[in-house]
Amino acid sequence: LLGGKYGEMSTLGNYLFQSFNFRSKTKLASFYSLVACITAEELGHVELVSNGVAMLNNGPDSKGDDTGNGGDITGAPMEMMKDIRLAAGFYSHGGGAVPVDSNGLSWNKDFVTTTGNVVFDLLHNFHLECGARLHKLRVYESLSDPTGREVCGYLLVRGSVHAHAYALALKKLTGVEIEKMLPTPNIPLGNIPEAQKYLAEGSHRRLYTFSP
Image 1 (cartoon, rainbow, N blue to C red):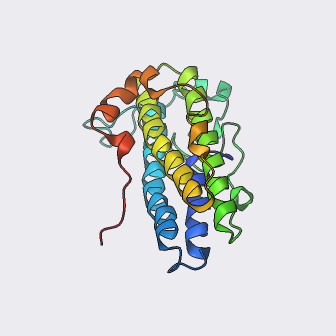
Image 2: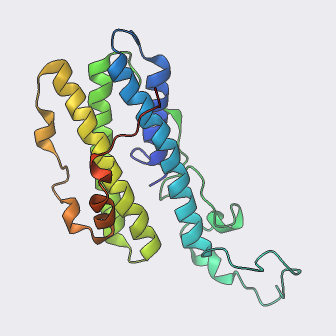
């Protein structure tokens, strides 16, 4: 959910540099504002996923965690780490998050698309949000931990807003009703228990914007 082609680092990186490179910002102010505002939210999503990874690996903070001298380490308390798929996540990163995919491959600039063509970039962003949704659904289906599922539930709701916003922007620019393709994949948010409280509060209808 963090690194990789469709992770939060990719949505942040794409929208960030598209907003920096956006042309005709005055003439196309509403479209520039859309990309820039979603960029700001994506930074929060990077933090959310990173915190979720740390909680899954280490558990929540508890009183007294950082007191004492570390206890007895002679009994190889981390012996099980040698068999973990990405042992470096513990040996090098202490169970914290880094911008890599599920195979440990680093996120890089090759995942960023910024062409200067507003229709192309918005279409790419629509594709990116659908791809991110696909991956979040598959992560959701692959785990039962309540922390991981809560993160997925929230991000699925917010990602649906972004995909719909990009679709409506494309419709305004081109007349093409690409929003009819949503949701992709065709698994409604109503099927995700962890998404229900966010739907109830209206998070699926809210686009965050900068104050005037």
